[in-house]
Length: 108
Image 1 (tube, rainbow, N blue to C red):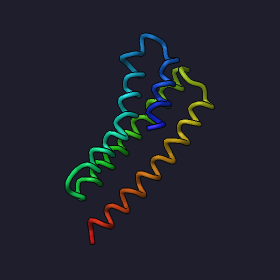
Image 2: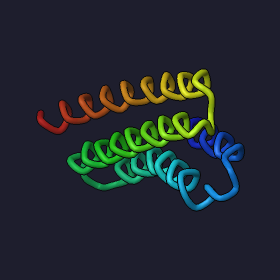
Image 3: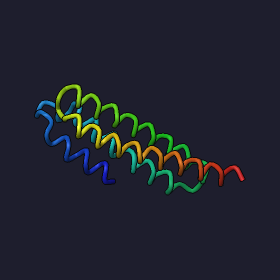
């Protein structure tokens, strides 16, 4: 959730003509991460949760790509890019750990 808020704040500094372009794509990708985690956790069957975590991980990779594009377009500086990518790296590791833990429980 903190990453979502951070991405929304970050995109406020993007050019106005990016509102429905890169800014919107980054916002949607970031918001999709916790939304898919919540949806998977809320499902009745444990077997669906790892699938939703996988989708969340894909959205995380998409958000990372949008951050890198924003840097290449000089919408953000390299320090900001590095800070966000460090955060997404931590989130990715947590998602992988959770997915492995859930998968182990499902396979028992």
